[in-house]
Image 1 (cartoon, rainbow, N blue to C red):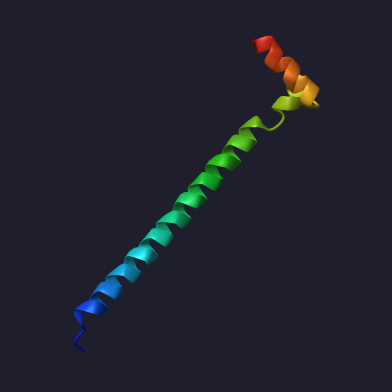
Image 2: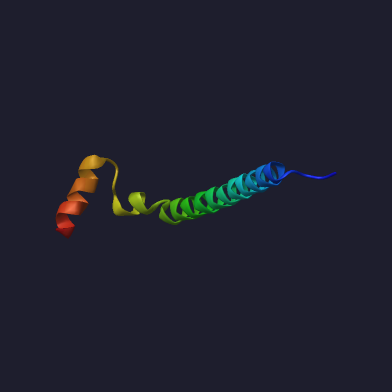
Amino acid sequence: MDLTLKQIKEQSCNQEIENKTKQKAVEDTEISKALLKAQQAFAGVADELGVQNEEDVQSLVDELR
């Protein structure tokens, strides 16, 4: 089957779009994994610090300033 130049360009473009879509999915998965890891690392820290509401958070911020 002989492909025209237009068909070759379309195939190349479609392949590039597919590759970018796959790469984006991989990046999104890696970002999700990193966020989950951070959440797990911080789990329980608020309780340990006695932070239960926004006022407690503001008090901590004020202390650090």
